[in-house]
Length: 416
Image (cartoon, rainbow, N blue to C red; front, top):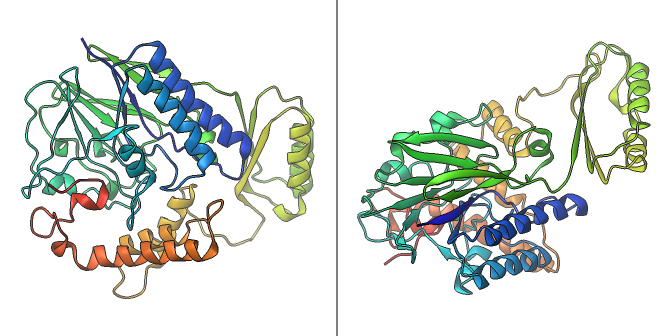
């Protein structure tokens, strides 16, 4: 008999500038752990992106660790892989610290120079192995270059990479791996990275993405998608939905309106009573007269908050005035916009686009609470030089597998 939970994409510490959303995000994780304890699962799988960045705010860490220690005190083991947000290219991340403190165990174990993965055996007898995720497509090649050994018995494979046959429209094909690249012989495939619930099978075994427990961006929240995780009882998955707050979504099509007409429409909308915790207002289209800058969006936000919303987001990125030129990019998330700009306008000669994307991600890192300026700048330099090192000398790394293969050590593996 085995019962386990599959959780992914918690992104604890996201919404750092919005205390209400950060609190909802934390509550979703705490509620998931509480349900796991109530349902008496044997262990919890975390399929990446437990935290929103490798060194989150310590208040967030404290809350998360308390929840996980509570699970451990109820004899629930926790196993994890890095997600694309958990990983730090230059130094140990919080994931490493928490494993050292025995809060959970990483299941990316580098076995030998042939590129095989070692299986961690849970006391239930279930074997668990996994591969961590990396930003900007850096992990996809691992699935094609590693030699996977079939498990001996019932086993779970944990991964944080999009599967091509399951990918949503907003994920680029080059970021994915085919479902055939997932290793053979597992009874359950626990996926992370895609922020929506998706289900498929591989040789009859479930290949599942849980979606996010809450979300990590306003774009996530705008999507009317399920939020939760799976509890798998005797290999039968059950989806458990998490509803820690209520969300109201309003979509306003301003195409063909005059700026005064749109302003009047928004004024009426902002004066309505709001019963939901979160109010998401999305405005799009091309005004036939006037410019968006002539509308006082701050006043509209203020009235919505006075009407009862705990937090308000106004998305007007796709709102333009007549004859105003703008860059047209379909994706709305920050990462997708950056990727689109790099692909459209290119990079300096000799600079790989993946390198540019990863470097941009490093340089965008914010200074965390309590971090001195010198330490912050040093962290950016360390991460930048580590990236340059990795891309220049992949073959020389200790513990690397096949020729030309970047080592698993780079994203969570332990050299033997």
